[in-house]
Length: 242
Image (cartoon, rainbow, N blue to C red):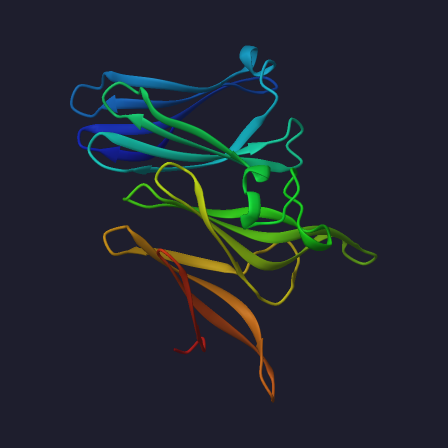
């Protein structure tokens, strides 16, 4: 069991059951904290049923929207989990676990907002890899991705290279309404330039920091960049000492 949130007298947990060979059952379970009774159980995965599903899932993120709604976003993966194909949004009724919204977004749903293949590949064979999900109180969803690709080095072996961030902003019905690219220097190795984030404006906006090599006329210096994500993206560059 892993606690993922609480709302009122509810304690909401991610429950996984294991047998030899891996997870056999996964569900979101809500317990009444006063009585210990189960209010609802929403099934994510059952090994016997999974063979009928052409996708796998991962990267769950949860948030309570209000007193009656619990929100969740997860990644849709290919069957061998080698590629992110899209995302699924769920809004559950905290009273009975009923679905108020269940909607999927695949890369080919992006239409004119972005040029991307079905397997998440973008320019120069980079792939958009999700780094963080941001779930806002007004129902909007932000997804921070980073352009990443696998590389091989004779000394280091297999490693990764990453470059620009791409932010996807969805409305409360999980329709893609904005795609914003944040250009930054390349980073080598299994790491990300994302640092941390903080919700603002009653959880309707968000600041996040990332680091970047910023070139000027005299030096190539590592700086921190502050990004404000609301209805648009605003960047502020600063020195680490700021």
